[in-house]
Amino acid sequence: MEKQNWKRSFFTIWAGQAVSLITSAVLQMAIIWYLTDKTGSALVLSMATMVGFLPQAVLGTMIGVLVDRWSRKIVMIGADLIIAAAGAALAIVAITTELPVWVVMMVLFIRSVGTAFHSPALNAVTPLLVPEDQLTRCAGYSQSVQSVSYILSPAIAAFLYAAWDLNAVIALDVLGALVACATVVAVAIPKQNADTNIAQGSIIQEAKAGYKIIGQNKGLFALLWIGAVYCFVYMPINALFPLMSMSYFGGTTTHASIVEIAFAIGMLAGGLLLSTWGGFKKRAISIIASLCAMGGALVVSGLLPTHGFLIFLLCSAVMGLSAPFYNGVQTALLQEKIQAEFLGRAFGLLGSIMSLAMPLGLIVSGVFADQIGINHWFALSGAFILALALLSAMLPHIKELDR
Image (spheres, rainbow, N blue to C red):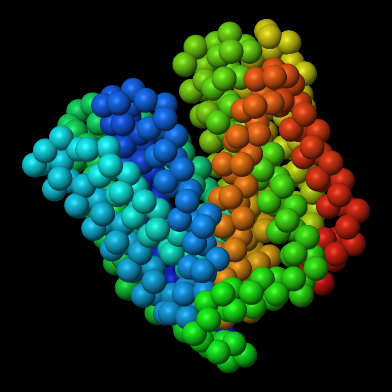
């Protein structure tokens, strides 16, 4: 299919998703602060985090099947409307009474289900609109938007939550979801071909077919599971940044915030670089270089003396810079190598694996970091990621991904 005016179509949807992503991140931050104010319970906050992961982790593969069965345009619009409706319901309850924790948890769960439908649908729609040689750059744009949301959402949430109340933040998110719906409605999205090889009726059978399709491309299959291990090792590091800044380097909450901002700015720079440059011609090199930069920065961070905070700040920016060159390139490779009718399942499976790896990694890292020291855990995690980079460089199927 010849993709005409792809820039107008892609950037129309991209702009709407950017608005929705930022407003959703602002509301998520405001809800965390609300729960902190009302309960002061670490258990409640942990439960809120888990509720955000569970739908994608448990249902992601099955949801991917439905995304492939249904019109992806309708899925995206429906998911945004569900997210908006959940926010509106929360606002109505907040007007009438003080919000019970269980209501907040239920709304977080519904919003997470909406996101679990929306993310694979959006990733599956992109290759229907964008030429193959532009997929990596478009993935870079998406990574940049995520980075902007990380940078802006805490500041916007702090201002709105302090100046008004939670309802104002909810109203902003509902507006963002409606903007996203309007941009999707405005774009003509080609329909994917139906999967005629698998009879509809068995979601499990169709999910297995999606897994089998990825397995047929041995490079993508290896990358999928290397990514799962990478997520298991690296994602807990995000949660440990404040502890490293304050406990090991003896800083304050301000120092911890500066580190988070440095990481987000590095990630924004990496996303913009990927969107303009496109990465190395051989995309396996981009992935291996990303792993090397991340692992090296973690090792250096873990070996720093307690007065080495400024170098840790630089290492955090390098970590952020490297991240889009793994995530963005992996997304583009899936979009390019997997048939359009299987993309919902592919991204549903990817999201499910990553969402499962993340909480498991948090549990393991929490136990070991307490036993061996937070700095040693950083160094050990970095060494493990460097080993993944070496494994990726040695596997012939990964080196041949661009064939």
